[in-house]
Image 1 (cartoon, rainbow, N blue to C red):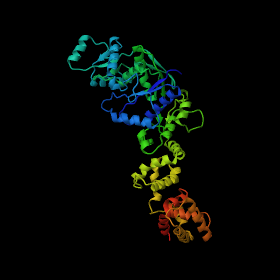
Image 2 (cartoon, rainbow, N blue to C red):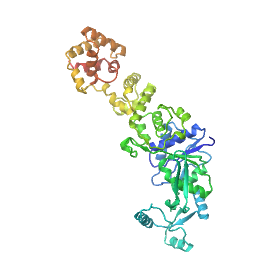
Image 3 (tube, rainbow, N blue to C red):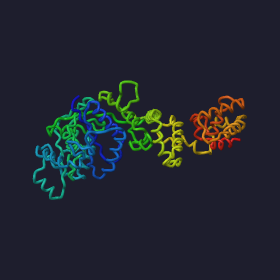
Image 4 (spheres, rainbow, N blue to C red):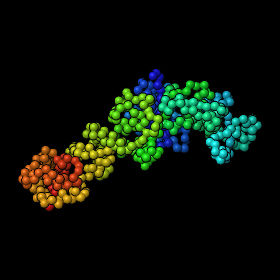
Amino acid sequence: MSSVRVRFAPSPTGPLHIGGARSALFNWLFARHHGGTFIVRVEDTDQERSSRQSEENIMNALHWLGLDWDEGVDVGGQYGPYRQTERLELYNKYADFLLNSKDAYLCYCSEEELAAEREALMAKGELPRYVGRCRDLTAKERAEFEAAGRRPVVRFRVPENGEVLIKDLVRGDVSFKCDEIGDYIIIKSDGIPTYNFAVVVDDHAMRISHVVRAEEHLSNTPRQILLYNALGWETPIFAHVSLILGKDRSKMSKRHGATSIEQYQNRGYLPEALANFLALLGWSPGSEEEIFSLEQLKQQFSLDRVAKSPAVFDLDKLNWLNGHYIRETSLDRVTEMALPYLEAAGYISTPLAPEEYGSVKMMVAAVRKYLSYMQEITEHVRIFFDDDVQVKDNESGQIMNGDQVKTLMRELIKRINIATTNAIAGDEAKVLLKEVGRSLKLKGKQIFMPVRVALTGSTQGPDLDLVMAILGREAITRRLSKWI
């Protein structure tokens, strides 16, 4: 496929959400797969809600996910500027063209008149739409409205009795009746273009070849195609990807999990895990494989494997996937990711001395197989910082009622205190436990389980030799002594 040019065009009114990130990723993968161009432009015509802070948040989130772009507000390009508020002159130029060709007209209807019109249509069981009250105003009528201080909008004149056919790469052929659309606004009374008009002008001016976006925009597409036709421009190829639903099949919301990329970033998800997960929301590789790097996704991605049916946001699956990446990435990286959470919990204070860093690294190594995301680490490492060990379940309590427990604790304390340093290497811990077992004629669980419960409060958790190595002689002695 030649000359692929696609874009992601967020509105900077808040953080980057999961749906927007998925759209950006699909566009990026499509462009990179075909050796095309990926553009990030900003649709900031919502002047009350748009902000540069939100714009920066969105860009940072895209970069964090591993995406780059060839043209955009921060990298420039030959078809800029890439913010809509910097392109108003261009929109006015094409609005004037449509007014002169009679494909658009000035509308002076008040909000009250429009509301009454909508209510009347709904009362008759018809779709609410603009019925064309100002379609054929005379010059005198326009002058009277102007004299009364009414500021007009510019409406597009929708052809009567026709149909608009969309040939969608994902949804197939979809048609809309023009009579159900109604004449729609393209320039508001303050001179700012509406979404449907600005996006058409921008996509044409930036030579966009494919528009890959969420299914919720499908209803906007007939309005945009009518504008392409009226302006005499070639229509891009459309592909509307499925909605993202929660596990209960309702529209995704906060109850299904965090909705913004920033929230997942703050909780300690790995960007490659989230990108991998997002790619599988509506796209299938055609195999049972689920673990993909961005490079692998670029090689395999195609729109013909994007499903029509809604994608289900399964937080459990994301957590499983992220846990896989936590276990597979380097221990140094996971340790660096852990530091902010450990410091926020009051467990450490940075910068760390080399020996302190080594101890933290051992903790991370001991618990990372239990993590779904890095923020969870504070609970898992609590056992290394809090000597007030509480038995966590009945099974653990029964183990500590064993006849051999006090004798076991005394013998282990005695042998630990023989050590010349506080540190106990993992191999030393194993040797100590074996020696205690031989001395007391105890085996396996008779040794390991009481010691584990005494040190951590649970029969489950990191390997016991790692726990002992991290705690050291003094902390082990304190904890074991409580059971004597």
